[in-house]
Length: 320
Image (cartoon, rainbow, N blue to C red):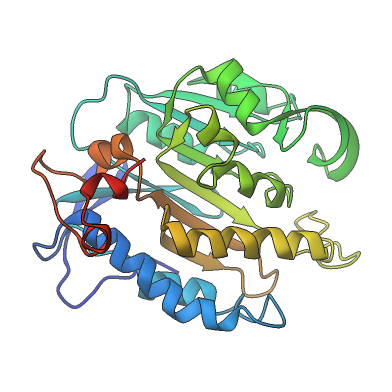
């Protein structure tokens, strides 16, 4: 499922370094306003479905996200293919003083990250996976690899990892905030890609407004995440064992959405759902942090008034 474009969209395909870039020229609406219009569109459709069975909206969620995908002006979106997916990254509007891209869960596939590196040679790439074999060699050819699992806790825990097959084993684990502060040492993270085999649910609170990253002054601009539905004891030819979702997982994701409906911190740009496995891929961008907006969405430094800021009459309330 590709990105949604309106009837007013003009698309210019540019082949750059082997990667197709989409240059999106839309109407003249302010980009920040466009981001928050998109958030309101998702909220108006999804929020009424979040009663009773929390997953009744699951199949509709990607459709709604793509239907409400923001209309943006003079912004370039990169599509970077892996073996079985596309990863997305909005390209910076100007030269950045620093650029950090993190990939959690390598899975022995770095095609997308290598293409990103060719398009963004000034960015530093960091990867983490509890399996050292193959992942270390693959990722270290263009970035820095950490042989550990990144999640919501620190210590040694049983995790589901891919070696020759998927299996449980004891692995060193570090929480997301500590991993970034200790190893990346940057306050602004340009892209966070998360595929950590249904351990992503406990990570959602870290990226919420006033979550652990916020508390430590760390801001993430773009996120690509897998949200897995887990089915009981079902092993497929691709060697993935997916377990049934827990009540805690359901409430964690629902809580993240409810909080985001209030803050509009995360703007959902693109989503896909696997027709059989039902896991969701979600690409979202930070619509509130001033530095992130400056890097990727504000084409000039003029003061702006948006529908969100008109509600509070002070523009700075839109930003962190």
